[in-house]
Image 1 (cartoon, rainbow, N blue to C red):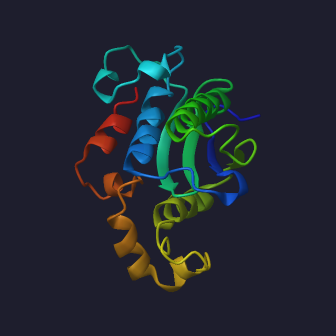
Image 2: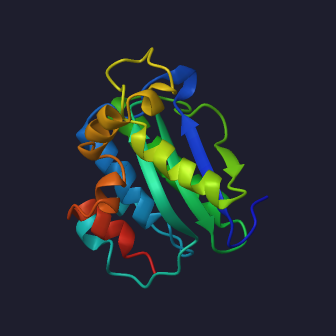
Image 3: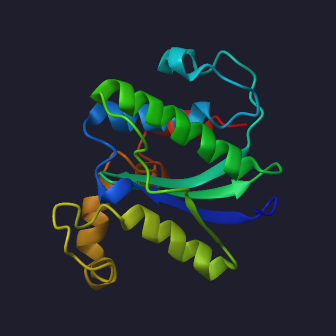
Length: 188
């Protein structure tokens, strides 16, 4: 159970650590869902088109503070705004994305490794660490055996790699103007 107005680190990975994003359109679809699923109203995700997303009044479930989509997993920093908001939001995203993925790739069954994981952000220090952790996650994407500590051991390299990674909110934090950032910042 999540607490309203509290922050959480929410994440999930592909079943058997398999990739969940196989091409650019998969990442774009998921980023589109970050916006579209964040609404208390029921939406028809099958008819979802990026240019139609601003045609309805918004009543959001969560505040998205940071995100990063990796080939086989995702990380989100979310603030619960309404009761069961995080659960509803993640359920809508994962159900819609699984349907999309299964149809596109003629796949059947689950693509995620069970239910999403959630960790309460208990203080400001952990919140700062979480935002950095999420945004520096792309460092080492081409080296799967790299340790998590490498982000701290090589901060300049991690920053340089992550600032160019388009499937994360890091560009929005440093002021790069792009469509994804504008979409997610129009939540309320």
